Structures are given as C-alpha cells and as structure tokens.
Image 1 (spheres, rainbow, N blue to C red):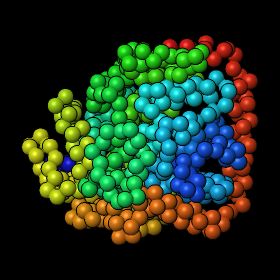
Image 2: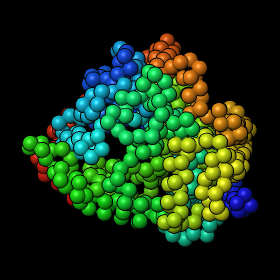
Image 3: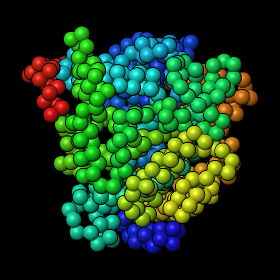
Image 4: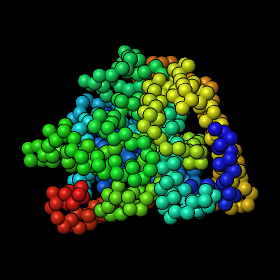
Length: 535
C-alpha cells in the first residue's frame, strides 16, 4: 500500500503541492445552552445574537437550545480558529446566566418535551425549517436531536484540480473531474473514518436522562446517573445517536455523484409506511413535511457529505446535480470537552493530511460486501475502539486495529511532510500569505501526536474523559459542567475587542432586517410554497 501511495504522491507536481496552501476550510460547531443546574435551556434564542434564520454565523440546529456557530471560509488554520474563537467569545458573553455545553452528549434533559424545537419566525422559509424539525420529532424523537458535534468543511482550489487532472491524464470537464475526485476521497474516508473515531471520539459516557425509556447496552459508571461503555470512543456516532431504521435501506456507499443523488432523490419521493400512518397533519397542524423516507436530503445521516452551496430557493440536492460537488463536509467529529473551542489546531492539521491522503491514495469503487464491512468497522470502533486486541475487517482478513492505524499513519505522515515542506518554502520566500504557519514541522507534529494514541490508548480523549471522571469522582454532568463553566469564564475574562463586538452587533441587526425582507417577499401561502419546494 505504501509503495502505491509513494507512486501517486510522486505524481503531485510542485505547482499542485503549492496549492495545498490554498485549501479552504470552515467549521460548524454545535453546542447546547444549559442553565446553572446543567439542565437544557428552556429560554428562547437571545435576540442580541441575531435572527437564527438569516444570521450567517450564529444560528440553531434542531432545538432552540442547540446553537450552531459557523466560521467564514478560511485558508489559514490559525485564521480559522481565530474566527471560531471570536464568534464563540461573543456568544459566551451574551448568554446571561447560561453556559455553552462543551460535550457532545447532552446535559440533563427531562424527556421529549424538555427539548424545544427550534423556531425561525413566520416567513415561509422559517415555517418550513420548523416543520421539518417537527417531522424529525415524530420520526425519531427529540432526544436523539439533543446531541452536538462539529462539522469540518474542506475544499481544494481549482488551480490544484487543474494540475491533478493533467497528471492523471483526464480529459472531462473540470467540474465533472472535481466531483469524481471528491467521491474518490469520500470512498477512502469511508474506509478509514474509524481512525477518526478512535483518535478524536470524545463521548464514551452520558447522563441517564438521555436513556429514558430506551433499550441500550450501556453499563452504570457511578451512582450519580452516568452510563458508559468501557472501551467506547463515540457513543454519539453509534446506535444511541443518529440512527434510523428507515434510512438503513438506502445503503449509500458514495461510489459516484449520480448514484448518490439518485438514491437520495428516490428516498425523498418514496413513501415510508410508518410515516404514512402518522400523516402530514394532526389536528389541522403540520407535523412533518411529507411521509417519505426522507423529508428533505438533509435528513440523511452520514459521517461525510458531498456539498454544493445552493442559490436562494434552490434545494441542495438540485445544486449538487446541476453544478457538481464544491466541497466535502466531515460530520463525525465529537466536541472535545477539554478544549475551549472543541477542536485544536493540531486536529485541523491532522484532518487536512488525512483528507488529502484519502484523495491521493488509490480508491476503488466500494462493493456491497465492502460497504457492510466498513459499516461494521466504524460501529465497532465507536463502541469498542480501545478494547485490547481489537481487530477490524480488511480485504486480506481481520487485522489488529493498532497495526492498521499505525500503517495508515505512515501514509498520512508522507502527506503531512508535503504540507510542512510547502509551508517552509513559502515562509522562506516571504510569501506565506494567509496560511501563516509558524512551525515548519507543525503537520508532522500533528501526526506524531496521534501516533502516540495508537501506542498508548489511555491518551485518547475518550480514555482521558473516563480517567478524569473516575479519579475525581465526577459524573458526566459534573465533568462537562465544570469544563463548560471554566471555558466560559476564561473567555469572558480575556475581554473583547470593541471591533469584534461591533461586528457581531451589526450582523445581528442586519439578520433581523433580512428576515423581515424574506417575509415581505413571500408571494404565496405556506402550503403552496411547501408544495413547490418539495416538488
């Protein structure tokens, strides 16, 4: 495998390597608002933060309490985290007595009704977003939707793709080539994403309130209501998290764009018997958008998605079909409760090298049998990733996880060296520009940090969380609650640049104006608008 990777890396021209300086990155970070008792917030989204329908950086996900903080696109690792830190700091300073929860598994909840469905105003678009979430409630329940995560958006510039296309001798239109290559990346991501769960999974435990009325395999961790699995890495990404029997029949293995979009289109228009029994309305009120397997494409749960920015009023799947893949969204990352932002610069650099490795390495189409094996590997690492002697499935037979991981890191390290080399050359030439990497070995160091976790499983976030909880006799609520408050107090004590506060105050004001303009632009009744949108 290494020799094959060596050969493909050799194909990368100097021009293509330099374009790695111009990778575009973005982060979408979720987090629950909680009160001083570690209970999910029952208050409305603070007006000072803007309107959730139209604010470009501060919104909500499923529930009114589940915030989503969105960075602008950045070509700098440091710049990306500064942007996330700025919005994070502004939000944390405007939550009153509430705190932003630092863990992926939720705070204390009291059943379905304690989780308020997010509201987006009374424009047609706002109503559609709210009813979609009501549909998620009747289909899966709200408790599953209280989980938080971090999404990492990643794309390469056209200049890179043009160089890579020449190297591969490809003659198709550039956008078709880009879509094909992004799916190549995605297939290898599916093959290797278990490694991300092992290295960065940070949800091995949860509070008992999440399990109300649920059958589960978890064990009691303490007498304070914490449950866990001894070797779990990310309960968020297992069956307790985002899981759907209705979607299990879709079997999307991301072999190409047409297969992906056609399968989703079929699911969006194919009725599902259990949802038909529920109906679209109850007592004259909409409870879901339709009775199909998926209400809209966003309902499809996956650890990675191909994406294309949609135009106003355009459905994401239509944008993908018509204009191809623009970037990929990594969706399987837990919030690391030890980190103020939930993610570090080292993790971002590792993700860069990991994703480029997935792109450059040979990536054959995924067969049905391999698809099942990949799902098994991912689920096994989620639930048992740190189990001594654990083996995963490979085409050559079962193999120890640590051996597979170390071998994979050898290849990723080769990519990391390229990143460090091009950064060093740019620094020497005085043209580092936006990338701004001060350490000439920062990517290699990021890989080495992860290598140690495979050698010493106790260094993983999931193991560290359980260790701290045990040694300090902390429940999940106490552990995450203390860290959440600590992060917030540190953020508030550092003070704010007036320019940052002014920036977000202006954005909040503009978001309310934009929402008003949306309402005024509505030319039809909601039922007509919804029918047209879903057609």
